[in-house]
Each structure stands twice: as C-alpha cells, then as structure tokens.
Image (cartoon, rainbow, N blue to C red):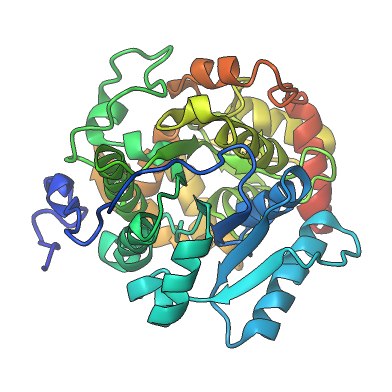
Length: 412
C-alpha cells in the first residue's frame, strides 16, 4: 500500500488502526499453562547488542540463572558472539568472560520466523520460557514504511513465536512516543499528569513521525495478543540516558547528537522541552524486577525519571561545567547551524526546516512534544516500592558524568 500523498506527507490523517491486523496463525493450542515467571530457565532476547539490550542482558545474567538466547543479525555464531562481547565490554568498561549461558542465535526481525530455519524456530519455541522483545529501529526521522518491517512485522513474528508449543510471556519494550499525536501535542488535557500507565493510546490518527506510528501499531498488536491469551507486559520508556555510575552513554541517538551539536555550535534553541534523564542501568533493573513478578502480568509500566529538568536548566548546567552555549530563538539557531562548516546536526536540516504544525518544523514538534512532565509513573513507583531502583541521582550529577564521557573532546 502506498501511504504517502502530497496532501498528507507525514500520514497525520491516516488511521493506523488499519495496520493492526492480528494474524490468524497466532493462536494458542491446547491447555494454557503459565511458565515459572520468577525463575525462567530459558529466555529469548532481541537486540542484545543494542544499548538497552546489552544492559538488559547483563542484568538478566546477574539476576536469573537462565540461558539467554540472543537474536542477532550476524554472518555466523562466532561473529555474533564477538558482537555481544564487544558491546558488554564497551558499555561496562571491563574485561568480561562471557558465561556459557549466552547463546547467540543468527536471525532477523524483519524476516518470517525471525529469519530462522523452520526447525530452529520450532526447537526454540519449545524450549524458551520468556521473551524480552527489545528490538526496534529508533530512527526519529525515518518513515513508517521504512520502519514497518522491523518494528511492526518483527513484533508479529515474536508473537507467533510466543504462541507456538507452549505459552511464553512477552516483555515488550515500548516508548512514550505512542502518545505523541497532534491532539496530545497541541491540546493537552491534563498538563500535570497527562498520560499514566493505563491511559489509552487511541486514536490511531495524528501520530507524529514514522517511529511513533510503528511503535503505536506494534504496541496495539501486543495488546491484541493479551486478548488471545498470550501474557504480555508493556514497558514504555522515556528518554534513556547513560549509566548512572560510569556515565557510559550512547552517541548515536538523536538526543546525544542534538546535545553534542548544540555544544559544538555554542548555540541552542529556546524550547519548552522538559526532560526526564533516565539512566539505562535503572531501566534494565526495573524491567528485570517487574517482569519476574507474576502479579504484574498483563500490566503496563512507565520507566522514567520523575525528577525532570527543563532544557534551559540543562544548558545552564552545561555552561557551569565549562561549555559555553547561548540560548537563541529557534529560527536564529537554524540559521547559525546552516552557516556552520561542520556539525553533526546538519544532516537534520531538512527536518528542522520543513513546516509541519503551527508553523513549526517536524523536529521542533518532536523536541517539544516529548516533554518529560507529560507522563506519570506513579503506578510503576508503587510496584517498585520494595526495590531500591527508583532512587535517581541528581540531574546535575548525571549531566556531569555524561558530558565527561562523550563531550570531553570539544573543550576549547
């Protein structure tokens, strides 16, 4: 189907509920027996070589005795094993002897049967007790058509896997982006606590950006699976930042590039953005803890740092650290960026410049739309009350660690 039209290039008027076509081959057979939730023996993890995935892998290794099958796009097992090891060593800055409980599986989310030979798919579907579906492409400026094979079709294949031979709970890693629509951005109903864990993500129109659209469809598929009898826990994540202890951070996501680009440019746009800095180690610990409690099956959780910080406060801290950055109107910032000789943000100029909503650019809408104070995590905090997980460091401490980790080469 050709979604794109000159009249609706961002698919704001397209009803994405039409994309939630739950497949007939995804159904449970025979007696439904829930596996051991607290102590799964075998786990399938998608995207173990990603930033969140590597932390989740380490946490599951530490907190369970399970063998973890890591679905990985690689040429062979040795290459996959090396990729997993490199990510763990990079993120945890240590020499790691990988335990024999890590089992790389060569596959591809965008292909039927997860890219596995039918016999291997069938074998794993019999053996695995739980699925942590973390795999997705998170490109903020890619179209729905580009992201659909992995983000939507891949989720279909995971659900098929979950339904084969024995019931397998799915722990699906979603995003606050599923709430990002024209309606929620332009006219918030409850600005103080707009979206909680049980808020509806409907309607499927007005969804802003391909990533939002693909994650919305995928989450609706997971919700449909619950109705079919497949247990599923949905973890919606806010802005995920670096390790709270080491400061190890991603440098390939939009926010990191955005921050780095502003510091190098020595100018930043004036925006209304409110940010929740949620360290990745807190995220993996929360997912591991909540997923292994039977009372939380079929629940939704919001994993985010409730201690938000404004963009203006963040720039102030960056200035205090020693990187001079001046706040200027958005149009002036664009012009400064356009005149710069080299900057990581120049690749985003078309998105910055395209008029999208109320005379704002697409990226400006995305920046302001992902306000950290739009989401409540009260239910999640209550569920984690017996753990030590939601005691976040001060934002200033976190920012200093992140700056030290990946911005230390730009001091002038």
